[in-house]
Image (cartoon, rainbow, N blue to C red; front, top):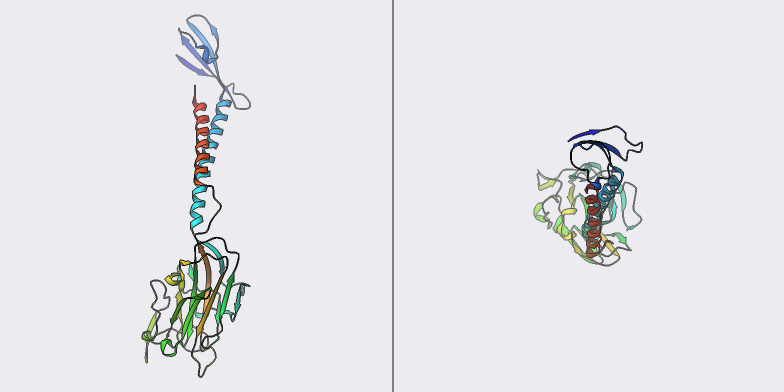
Length: 313
């Protein structure tokens, strides 16, 4: 048997013809062929209607891809429902956010520029509170209309600036959530044994240096007073991560207790950069697993049936 093809392609590209030369035998009626010639040699023109097959293939393929996309979307939405949702974020480059009240101003980060971990460094502006006292005036962030969630994370870069004197003078920095104290530690920029805070891995961003008569101090990063300045990445502070919380509002307070006596300008204060509040366990609107599975089954069956029919002879 030999096969010859002609070039009589329809203009719409949906069908073409094949010529078969058959020695003996019969052409089955199912081929829908028009025959011509004698008993021994027949020229048969078979028309394959590719337009119908192409349509079935296209619809079947689309149905399969659409179903797989639906299932993938459900899976990713389900993962996102458990992943963190950022509900507040500020690097203070656009000024003071309206949600923050109390004692706070915006200044340059000065020598802190570029200090930090990968993807999270001090830059541009810094929110600072220069108030002193036991306790000093607070800086407060109020969030409302929070979605359903199970826990909250408080992340920020902390600058402990100038002459903090640690436990001997109770120079203490604190973070509170809805009135509950989450973090309360003393900081000393001169002597390590007078500081209660022991940073966990990746938290401390600035190294202490030998500078007699002090034990271990920090390099001066600016801010007028000739004193060491420390930096911490509080995103890695365990007490500020995965905090049980489900209320629709959150009030976060930062404050310090700083020693009195003779107070030169900018003697000791604290600052924050890259503030981010994240909720965990949020509830996204996703289909029930059973609904997604049933819809996926019907979509796949229909799609594969169309694909199978497109190959059927």
